[in-house]
Length: 466
Image (cartoon, rainbow, N blue to C red; front, side, top):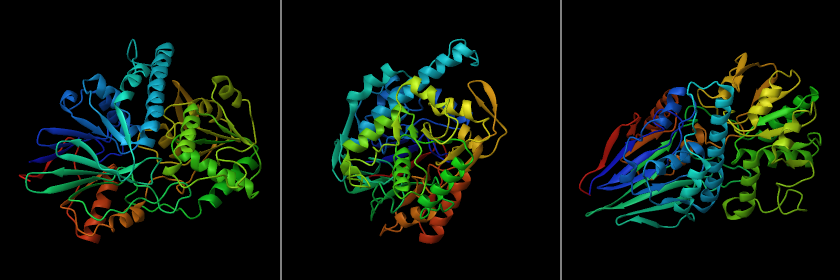
C-alpha cells in the first residue's frame, strides 16, 4: 500500500484547512475549511476544487470552526456525497456554524446587490441555507478515544485537543499489507490550565505528524487573563461609553461570560448589563449546557444555578429589533457579538454605529488573520470600510492575548515534547509563512526532528509498499 498527502490549504497561511490523505485509492479529506482574510485567499473559495469531489471517500473534521468546516456545503454541491466524521459536540456545533455561514452569505449577497457595491450584476452566496440542510444527514458524531472504522484498512481516533468544545487531535491509522502506520493531525491545539476546557491530550507516537503553528513564534500571557480583563472593562466604563467585544461564538464568548460573571461576583467590575447579541452564540452556549462531558463546568460559580451562562445582568438577544435597540445605549454596557474577526455578523452593525464614538471602546480578544477587518482595526487604520461606507476609527482599541484559544509557542512545544519517538516527518501547518518557518526551526533545533514547511498544492509520498 502507498500513502500520499496533498496540502490543499492551511499551508503557510492560517485558514483554509484541507488535507487530502490517500491510502492507495481510498481518499480522505481531513478538514474542509474556508479561506479567510486576504482577498487572494478568499477567492480560492470560488475556484474549482483541486480534486474531483466525487472521488473522495470520506471527510474527517477536527473541529467546528469555519476555517476547518466552512467549505463542506460547497464540496457536496460539487459532487461529494460520502460520510463526514467528527465528535458529537463538533457535529452539533457544525450545524449551527454552517447554517449561520450560509445565512450570512445570503444576506451579504443581498445587501451588496441592494447597495450596488459588488462588481457582479447579481452577487451570489457560495452556498445557501438549503445547501447546508441537505448535508446534515451525512455528518456522523463519535466520542473521544473511540476507534472508528472509515474504510477497509483505515480507522480514526479522536483525542481532546482542548481548543473549543469537541475539538480533536485526529489519529488516522492505516493498515498496510506488511505494517501499520499512523498519521496524526493536531487540528488546533488549545491552551493548558484554562477554566472551561481540559488540557490537550498528550500523544506518545506518530509516524507522520501535522502540527498547527498559529502562535508558533511567540508566547501569549495566560495567568493574568482575569485581572487584565477587569482593568480593560473598568477603564472602558470610566470613559462613560460602552465596551464592544467582537468574539467568536464558539469558545471565546463562553470564556468571556465565565470571567465577567466571576469578576462581578467578586465586585471587581461594576454590575452593568452584558448583551450577547448573536443568535449563533446563544445556540452555541446551549450546546455547552447539553454536552457537559466535553468541558469542566458543572454548575455556576455561586452554586445557585445550573449554569454559569445564566445570571441577572446577562441578556441574550436574538431578534433584529433587540439588536438595533442596543445602538441607543450610550454608556455602561458590555456588548459581545460575532464574528470574532469583524468580517460578518451583527458586530458589523455595532461597529458601523460605534467606531466614530470617542467614548466607546472595542476590545480585540482573538487572532485576527491578514486582510480581515479586525486586523485593520487592531493595526489602527484611520478609516474602516463597513457596508460600503468609510467610517473613521475614533473609538479606543485595546487588545488582550490572554483569552486566546490557541496554544502559544511554549504550549505547542510542551505538547510536542510528549512524543517519545521522533515522527518520520513533521509538517508545519496553519501558520503565516514567517511564523511557521520560525516554529519549524525551533522544533528541529530542540528535538532534532525532520521538519517540513509544505507549500500549497504540494504532494508528499508518506509511505511506499507498507
